[in-house]
Amino acid sequence: MLSAVTTFEQSLYAAIVGFRAAHPALTPLVEVIANAYLVKGTFLCALVLLVGLDRHRRYLHGRQQYLAKVILGAIAVMAVARILQHALPHRDRPIAAFAPDGAWLWTDSSFPSDHGALMVYLATAVFLRNRIVGAFAIGWAAVVILLPRIYLGFHYPTDILVGGLLGAAGAVAFLNFRLSGRSAARLRLIEARAPAAIYALGLLFFYQLGTNFDDARQVAATSVAIVLDSGESEAQFAGQAAPPEAAAERGTGSAGLLLER
Image 1 (tube, rainbow, N blue to C red):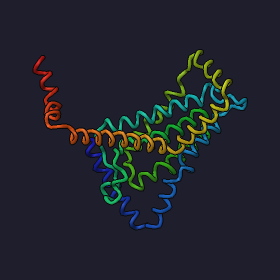
Image 2 (cartoon, helix red, strand yellow):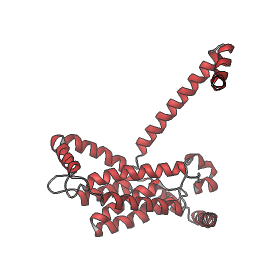
Image 3 (cartoon, rainbow, N blue to C red):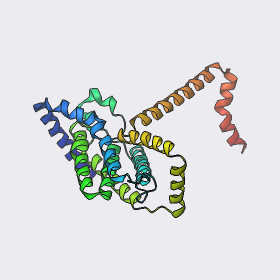
């Protein structure tokens, strides 16, 4: 079944490539929309705040802790989506097959779409709070955010579909989760004691949320790469500097211990 779906999607994307070739003026516009955070996560975050802010300025503990749950759910949904991308078999993005010159930009697996998971999560969170604004948010996410990613070859439709289902399920689960009385009281205490710090951290978080955590992920990936590179360099230096006897001892040390046991 999966191979049949993949074949269908490859044929679909081949048709999209043909359409793009026939209408070259459309692609730059779609690229601008796909890369503009203002019309993607930032806009959906604004809708979350629109339906979630309390007129009494109780931003974390008011109205059933809506914003606190949105924050926790967003972190969980992104984490699960990224874990699935690494745990499931690797799936090349459509652009890797039809635009090999740009394939180096998309080395991570396309399934499921973490972009789709997060954007649908936000839209569903709005919908669960306000049906009218939420219906608009879902339509906006589908047409303005997700369809361009299929059109440009960033994802196959099933990447978006599964990511979207993950995001919707996460929103339903977290926003219907009831905090204990102790947790709610703790939120009230934290916000009452340090409101400025809470709002500053909230601003930073919603900025990252609106940009799909791109800055945070880039910093994390660069830090990991630096650590790994430094570790390899130290290992190579140690191997070159060590005398032959020490190198031989390192090579047989584990085997010697096993034999002694």
